[in-house]
Length: 123
Image 1 (tube, rainbow, N blue to C red):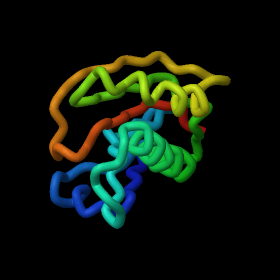
Image 2 (spheres, rainbow, N blue to C red; image 1 turned 120 degrees about the horizontal axis):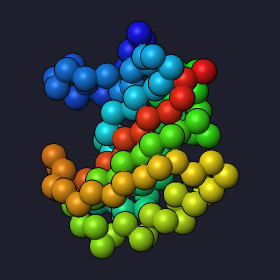
Image 3 (cartoon, rainbow, N blue to C red; image 1 turned 60 degrees about the vertical axis):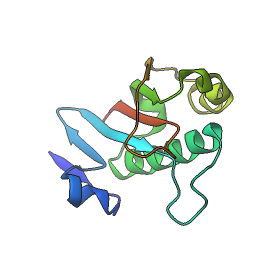
Image 4 (tube, rainbow, N blue to C red; image 1 turned 180 degrees about the vertical axis):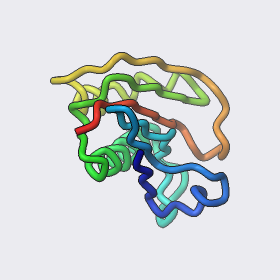
């Protein structure tokens, strides 16, 4: 088993890894699109794009890739905003669409508009 850390200050505080490689899979933790060095109130599609870029980096560090994602879960505090993310998701997953679920739920920070977690094939 391999654990991957992104350097987020929340990882040690909450006791989680950005991703874990185990049993032929890469499990990427819920990832948000808030830039700590930028304005917090970005539109949902910008947050979606940033979250996916963080996920891609974790997958690449794990020796996998976005094209190996088999399952994705989207969590949004306002499910009505999900449609604005569809073009970003089309760009990302059009050639290799994974199984997907969208859940409407409150996130830890009110500035967060989307959280994405994925499971991918390793290697």
